Image (tube, rainbow, N blue to C red; front, side):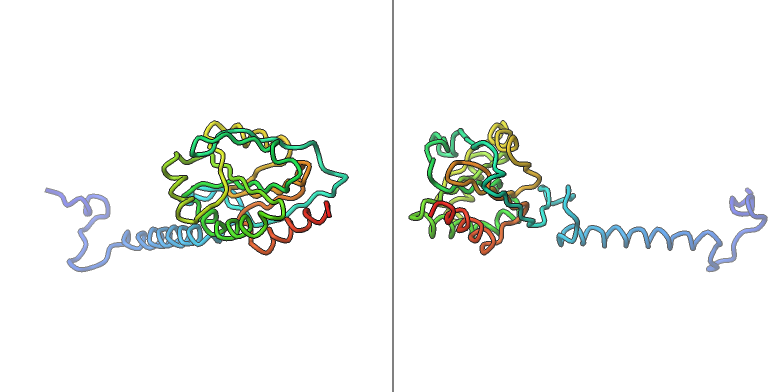
Length: 214
């Protein structure tokens, strides 16, 4: 029987001797290492805004946009049902500053910002500030478990059909989850944060809008 290596190259390799084809494994190892490093970068959040594999949300950079009073569009009115079955209609909150926040339970930046949102809701309630979540992903079990974990004192619209988001996007682009939008006392969009809302930043925006009616 003719040895297959001899048939191609004229002689069989000596025992224990490397063949010329063996170094081809090195580039494969380098490619594999590159994939591992890429995965680590994604998991650490060291990416630009956009869809990030494995995170399940669209990353935001915390950028802030504000609108002068003269540049604000028509009032935004959201209606729906919260996760306990209660009706929500933001037109009933006219005269209050309303903070809208998109979220879902397994979203890492949503969990990170939750304590600041809860603190804002508790600290500014007597000044006419209301918070409302918008959740387009979770069922009632997951959403209510999140609310219990973080002791959330405000409701969230169950928005799996996307109606609340569609209404809001008619006035301001929602480019990430989470996104936080501040409505002035007339229900108009006054500010937006794309991505995690830092507590001091959000509080400052709310206080600025509160001062407009002082």
